Image (cartoon, rainbow, N blue to C red; front, side):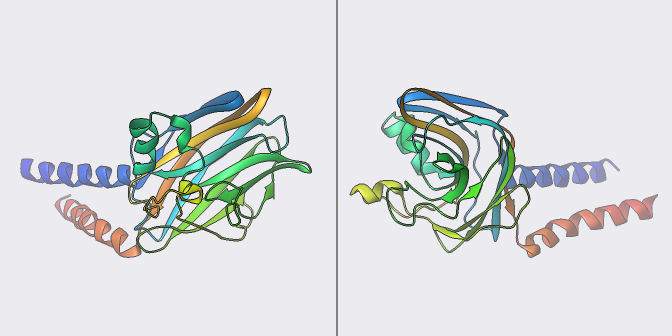
Length: 241
């Protein structure tokens, strides 16, 4: 009987471990920044493999935001690679280098209102941002990522449970557009990040969010492989009862 209890405990721990690796979160909170080059961020402590799965979803709710000027301050929520995180925080010691890295949802104020869109890098270059969708004072979002090969993929954005917009390819490191030669964005070790960046002297920007999560949708075969041992254990326990 003790051996059975030990076996159940081991498999349960293994399942919990696999579940922990399948999703990551950041705490609910508010980012505030302002001025020329103002920056604030919140990043997950752990990473997920967002390159090997059929789909990855970055979801949550933006509960409030303040974007005073047109195209002068932006918030983003999405994923960055481990190398991009380390390059900013460790190699250069400039956290704002993480802004516009890898794949994310970007929110901004335009002349006709407030919008969010999928993005892969700065909008200074063609293909950097995707289809814009209007937002209210608060909204839910689902940034669906469909990885392709060893790096990159296609991103789709849904707002308030609506249809996904047009897909946007991602996978190019932003800094390569300025003459660098960093490798393609392999998101096999990806961190969840919310960021706020401003270029507006004398103005304060903010974004508040909750329930922000990045979740890997596994292959059906992986789910069946995990369900098998659990099903056998449950059947064995029913027979014993």
